[in-house]
Length: 129
Image 1 (cartoon, rainbow, N blue to C red):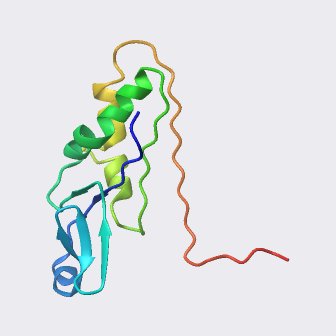
Image 2: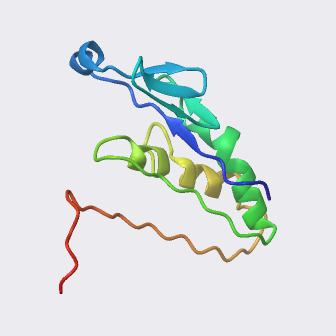
Image 3: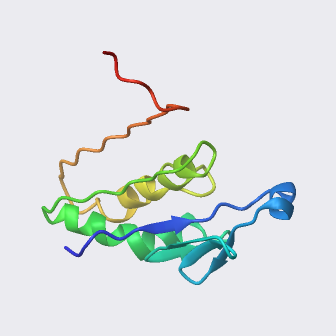
């Protein structure tokens, strides 16, 4: 298996957010011009469909798992950033888990463990003394 790849999927901005957002995507970087810049292995733009994310980045992980290797697909981001949409999907646009089950895991009996954890803490919690 290859090294860890970090990709980003930009969710479409509302009309109001688009007017005020300082973020700009340049190739595989997202930046606030003249301030901060973050590099990724790949950035999927706002018009990207989940199938493209699956085919480009998730499929190889799933195929490796079917062959007996370990693999992880991890979605991280703030509330309403599109994590659940990408992982679970909807009736009209399946997420990466339904796509994996439909496409890669139909070759016969297979035992796969999937864990979904949702961590939510709006502020840093202090450890008790």
